Amino acid sequence: MSIFLKATQSGWYPEFLYPVVDSVLANPEYKLVLDIGTGPGTLPQMLISKDSGLRITGIDISRAMIDEARRSVSHKNVSFEYQQAKKPLPYASQQFDAVTFCSVLFLVDDSIKTILMNEAMRVLKPGGKIIILTPSGMKPILSSFIEMWDYRFSIYNFTFPIWKLATTGGARKWQRQKWSEKYAKENQLNYRTTLTFNNNATIEIISKSFTTGI
Image (cartoon, rainbow, N blue to C red; front, side):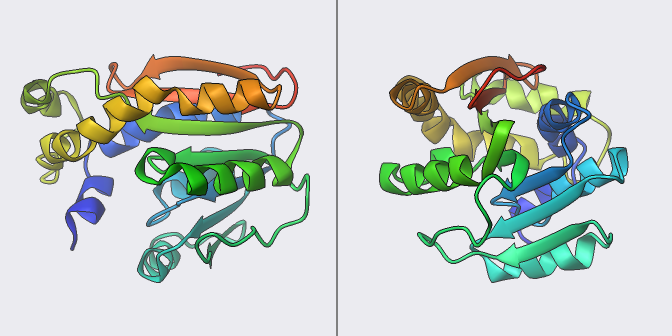
């Protein structure tokens, strides 16, 4: 099992994702969710366990991750599809109420960011929102060796310091660039952000029109 898969089964990883779950569920009218870069399907699994009425699609450029997601999550309202990199999303315009990116955009170059965001905006319904979760890189890496004991016990909690070490550089660059905020401003979109996960992550919301709840 890879370090990433071990991390998704740890006690800390769900805490990282919960703000996204809360943001989706903040609007009870949201029913159709697209998770871009779904990995092994952890976010869809968390969402459907909270609201079985949701219809969730998870996509990823890794066939191995899609296979893992299909093994891990079995629900009639959850589906996983392989997505070719740099290709348009195979969905109708204005199809989804919420589009999520969890630890995705800060890992890719600007041209791919733009493609992904443009496609996310295309498939987003009026009144819907794009939710971007990214490590903040704010806290010292050494702090993670203490914090990992704060989460539900798991033999995989050792992955928290590894995650911090692997993501801090890219996360700090992302925060300095303010890429999402600039994208929203250039496209006359609403934007807001807040720190979450004990200041270890940021959640950014982009919407075409005002939506309630972070």
